[in-house]
Amino acid sequence: MIHVEIAGETLFTIGWFEVTNSMVGAALASLLLLAGAWYITRRSALIPNRMQSLLELPVEWVAGIVEGSTSRWRGYVALVIGLFLMILVANWLGLLPGVGTIGINHTVEGHEVLTPLVRPAAADLNFTLGLAIITFVVFVWWGVRVNGPVGYLKELVGEPRYMAPLMFPIHLISELSRLVSLSMRLFGNVFAGEVLIATMLALTTATLFVLPLAFFVPSIFLGLELLFGAVQAMVFALLTMTYITMAIAEHEGDHASEHDGPEHRDKEADTHPASSPA
Amino acid sequence: MEPEGDHNGRDTPPATRRPANWGIAFDLGVRLGVSVILGLGGGLLLDNWLQTSPIFTLIGMVLGIGAAMYTIWDVAHDAMRR
Image 1 (cartoon, rainbow over the protein chains, first blue to last red):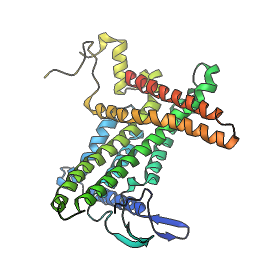
Image 2 (image 1 turned 45 degrees about the vertical axis):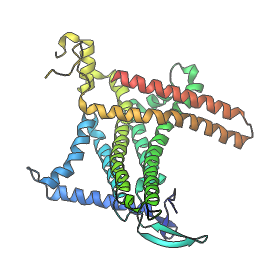
Image 3 (image 1 turned 120 degrees about the vertical axis):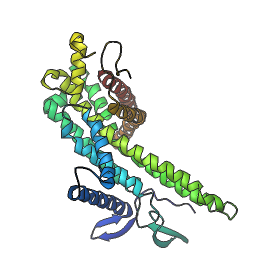
C-alpha cells in the first residue's frame, strides 16, 4: 500500500516538544553542512584540491549571481548562499537509500504502517514555512532599512493617498503572497517528488511480472528528483535575492549617484549615452 | 566574438543575472493564484466570524484579484527597470 504522510511523523517527545522525522532530516542536513564548513575552514589551501573545489563551487556560483544584484549585495549574500545550500543538501539527502524506507513498524487500524526515521526536511511544510518566514522578515527589514519605517508604510499605502483604503489591503495581500508562494512551492515540489517515487516503487514491485522494471524505472525518477532538488533550491535562493533587491532597488533608483553598483552604471549610461562604453 | 550589447550601446544583463529571471518566472504563476486564495480565504474567515456572508467574501475576492493584477504590474515594472 502506498503511504506518504503529508505531515512529519512524531518519533519521540522531549517533554511537550515533539521530535518528527523531518526534524531529523533537517538536523542531518545541518550536520553535513557544518562538517563541510569545518573542512573548508581547517583544510583550505590557496591551490584547492578536488574536495575543496567541490565545496567552493556552489558558494562561488551563487555569490557570483548575487554580486550582480545591487551595490549592497554583501549585506545579504550569506543568507542567499545559506538558504541555497541548506535546501540543496536537505533535498538531496532525501534521495539517499534508507531515507523514507528505514523506520519503525506499527499497526494502525489493522494495517502495518512504517514510520521512517528520516524524512526529507522540505517535504514538511513547517520547514519550508520557517525558511519563507526568515526570507519575509529579511526583505521587509531591508525595505524598512532603506526607506525608513514611515517610507515603507507610505509604499504600502501607495499614491494617491485617497486610494489608500483600496491599495493598502492589495499591497498587504501581494506581500503576504510572497511568503505563501515561497513555502508552498518548495513543499509542493519536494512532497510531490516523494509521492512520485513511492508510487513508482509500488507499481514496479506490485507483481513478479513487472519486477525487472523496479531496477531502472525508479532510478529515472530519482535522477529527475536530483535535478528538481537543485532547481528548487536555486529558485528559493534567487527569489530571496530578488525580493531583497526589489526592496533596495526602488530606493537606490532615487540615489543612483551615491552608489556605484552595476545597475547604476546602466542607468547612467541611459542618461548620458555619449559617456557610456561602446 | 562580439561583446554583449544592444544597438544603443548599452550592456545587456550579464549572464549571472539570467538565473534570477527564471526565478521570477517560477514565482509569478504561483503568486497570482496565491493572491486570489489569500483574498478569498480572508474574506471567508471574516464572514464566518462576523456572520456577514457573503459581503467580505466578495470584497476579499475583488481585493485578491486586484492584488494578483498588481503583482503582474510590480514584476513587469521591476523587470523593465532592471
